[in-house]
Amino acid sequence: MDPAVLRDDLIDGLASPPKNVLTDDAVAVAMRDVPRHVFVDDERTAYADRAHEILGTRVLAPSTVARLLQALSLDGDEEVLIVGVGVGYTAAVVADVVGETRVHAVDISRPLVIEARENLAEAGYDGVLVDCRDGAEGFPEYAPFDRILLEAAAVEPPRALREQLRDDGRLVFPRGTHRQRLEAITADGETESFAAVSFDPLLVEGEQSGAVERNRMAREDREHAQRRAESRRGWEHEWIEWDDAIDSPSRSD
Image (tube, rainbow, N blue to C red):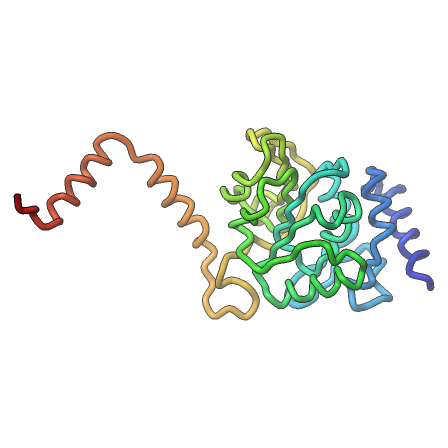
């Protein structure tokens, strides 16, 4: 069957009872435009509302993509960062809404970055910039962003991502560990909660598929150390300077 017909059937199903998960017209139009079968190898199930496993990552079900992008609240002219690009499908839908050159994406897995670039080019969205890096660090070279989408679960959004939001920006991520809920947080800390979701946790360097060593605390340790350093006041600074003075060699007059 024609993929365009299958896409129309999928979107109609998401927008109608009993699912009723797709209510944003711009997102619906974009999901009708993006050829999902380019991103999912099995054309028979590409337009079923189900997730797929590819290269060690989960390609989100279309209903989950709809929930994410509606929580992101796109107007059509935002600069967007996607953390955890996977195979690139969500990035393509965002690009269809805001324009491909306004979308930046990162992933910690190099094979997925290569896959996403190839898929986006084949689908007609090769203007999306995809780079291989630790998503917890964001993409500071292109910050600030109007919207940031974190496609991985975290108890708190990484500090770097919060700092890369514009003053009126919005970050969407799955909050929690075993029990998660989709949440949007603004640059000034206001939050809005949405439906329950289930995502894999945010990975740091060493945790990607095939890594020898896995240490999920690395990012949290760095952030706590930075906060402690920034919070030192008064006598703590004087004590450190005094210690340094004792350890250093005496200066002759």
